[in-house]
Image (cartoon, one colour):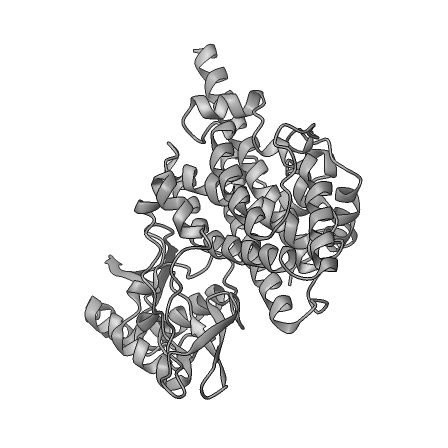
Length: 261
Length: 184
């Protein structure tokens, strides 16, 4: 009996940790994108970035609400978002990288959207019905995100010499942060075994194929797929950028605990 | 004693009546169409004296959902239904296929081009090839007709417009910009 309970607890805590990875990644990228609000290079771009941020915050809410329910510790989505510190966040390193220039922001978005699209598509088959439903809802939105970021990478890459050099530099700089989207750790293995999510490595071929199509049309050089990769975001070991982002995002709840609109 | 209230309790309005009341609740962002036209309301059922309305979000981050939920409760309370419960349903995910023909006409008359494209077929996306073609740059471009002059010489300015559910277009004939309600 004791053993059963242990297995059940392990299952719930794995699922909670995995949902944090999905929710935190959407939340952190949404926060990054919303910093462009009022500063976009053109009105249309400003609106598009904040619309993507809005979709992502909606998705983050669905993942984190579910995580809080699974945890069953009386926390809600807001407490998970605003009252955890950097080492408790499980987002990818890629999404916490700074906004930089518009080329940096769009390349980060494109590399992420491409993974996100194939990941959600695979999650439609999740053995967990709630996860499959959230993925079904999110996939429709992410299809538009990916079409847009792909179009813009082509426009910048196949644009002027300056825009091309900036977007190429962005791809080279961000590339080492893409590895952890596909490299499985012990949690990924446990989650894959329960049929909740796919083995992350299986998404890589489709991701690389889509990148190859866009990079070729954008006249950009794709960095080497077997390059050395950073890791740590999924396990809570982050770059310095996350701390600054959280300091800003969590300020209100830290300064005025329990404040509500 | 409030006899009027108890009479109401006995004469519980049927679902069709409730649907017709909901059809008068406008969408907060596009007030020319109702939430029923948009396909947000999925079900109306009675559990004893409680009216349960099932709604589905158009977009997961749609800030209008709270306003819509409040508007539904208010509209039904005003008609004398005392106990209203709203529940949210994610699956099947909202699609513009659920928008009524009448709703599409109203959108057009309001200056917003209604959804034109085939919706994204989620079931078809399960194979790698279908998934790749949905995001490929070689996919066929859709034709969006200008709601001002009827021309089909239009081009997309941005995939996102004033709200996540709309894209920005421009007409190459009458030169007017317009919103397009994206297929979803």
